[in-house]
Image (tube, rainbow, N blue to C red; front, side, top):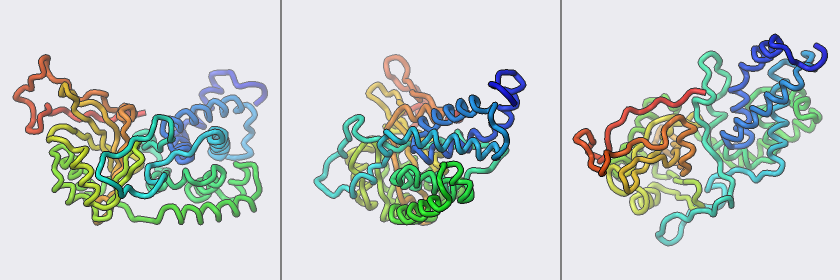
Length: 353
């Protein structure tokens, strides 16, 4: 094919050959950069570059390998001037000081890791994205690797490209890929010990999520005791402090977070292939406003980690409204309200992309 691609037939052929990889490329970019929004932007840039160079693509590699070459290098370029994205547990050890509310980090002082809505990458026709490759703890650990080591590990261990294929994608040697993979594996083993998690569809995981939601909506610490493991941890962005141990976590929530029954309402969802919930908090006018996303790490013995992202904009990315409930004029609740002080609502389905 000579010259620049311009015809409708070329556009249709490009869309047919490349469109099927968009969701897995989004997952790849997310693993690289730790932000769903940034990943979406990088996928857009990948397809723009692919379209511009499509006329020169001569099939020397597969379309998939060609797209991953573009996407990986787009990510590496984007990562060069950026700080890594972290969770509070990536900054320091658990808080063990005086009893006080957690300390919020100044805006812009830290680049926070973000959750990935599962419905952004779900594709009923193609099962190509391994669940464990998107787990929140792994994504957090990946961000601590140098960018090229991160790319090598993902390409080799997650996407199963061979060492020579990975070398071609990164424009380096097979020996450099093997050396980089060895260093990345050793670093990752130091950062995050393996833990066997329950799938979000597992009945036990569903029960843990329901219990956590009920505990918050009822402000019931006894339910939290049944949900959390004794060694559970709790962290929330944009707060520097994080907490270890069920007793410590529950004390913090009871003292500074839970409030009264009805102050919170949570809608179950999934993120990073883990049970999650969209979180709403009741304001002084009784409106339930978007508060953020909470992601649970479920195991056979209870929830081992609770990670909350206090960013109202995330709720919209998961397909839910900014305001879940607005009271009638004057603030008087009707008889339809539940015992928790908020109107029963139909839980919306997340928007599909």
